[in-house]
Image 1 (tube, rainbow, N blue to C red):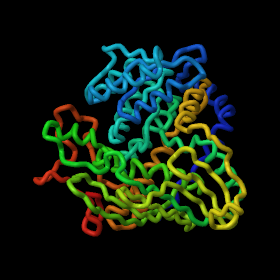
Image 2 (cartoon, rainbow, N blue to C red):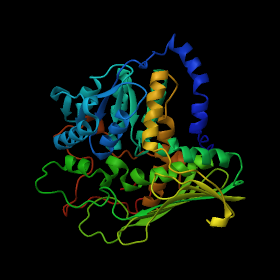
Image 3 (spheres, rainbow, N blue to C red):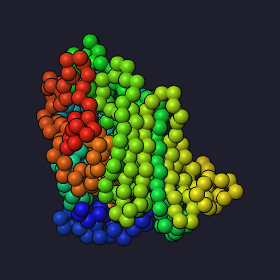
Length: 458
């Protein structure tokens, strides 16, 4: 096995050092790196690429920043109704901060190019389409010198991760500011918990546990293509959680947060994964997902992260992450992503009389904090680039997914160098293109076959 992945860096350390790093960046900016930021008195323009619910929410957070003028000037999607719904919602919430004329609303797979072309260096494009398109859109933004916010996951397989890591280097060379939507890293409660764990307050980290067990989530359980939707490609994009090529499936899109926050507290990425899962009570669902996942991640020092995911209605629900140490227990998150209600207990169990520390309530919303941090970095020209960490988190997530889907132990390096690329021609898709995965005669799609397909997921 090759050398273990690099340790996870602390967001708090990153921000603490930003002033010192900014000075160095300014020197470089005078030589080979372009000086691309907006000063406090200048309006930052944003363009939204991907106008679904998450994209609309991210744009609303961007427009809610308060450290200088900002406005939405362009939007793009492959579905006109989604763009229109998003526009109306944002206009109602933010008034004249939404300034998108009809000729800057773009429909189609080339819409991202047109929307980005409405921006100038120092502005920001929001990349919130299904993650399969992330490397394509990010590459164009780099070419145009535009800052970026991209939703997680940023990759879905080994080949797209390798591409994203190369793009990360290029974006740093251009001094671009890039945020990745792993907003838990911006959570004040988790940041303080991380510092306390690194200070040894729970002792040596011996074990981590993470859970996201809920009912039906997103579009992970997807029924047959409607008769009135003639394009199989657009059907799959509209239900992207159901298709591995588009999103990495429900596992990658939803479990990445619990995986990432746990690895952050451990301050390392795991080196291998061993997993299982299955499909139950499928009804007329034709998607590619398992309904439950159980994955054991192992770090280089032998520490384990045990992850459980489930999307079966009627079952007990649990949504939380924990770190057990030789001195005590850390609650990383309690229920959903916000508020974290991070706390530390003496001993192994959550017993009220053993509570040693709890982050005070209420907590600032990390969905807003990640935007405050990004826009501040742009205005202050501070180094700010989360792409490598986002790609590594996405890869580690895919590693666990592939272990469950194949029934094999999968290492970090094996996942990174895996040859299966779910959508190799995603950059060439048009409104008339066939879908990257095609339905079988009965309308269902290929699913993972653990123990039968050992080197690929379907």
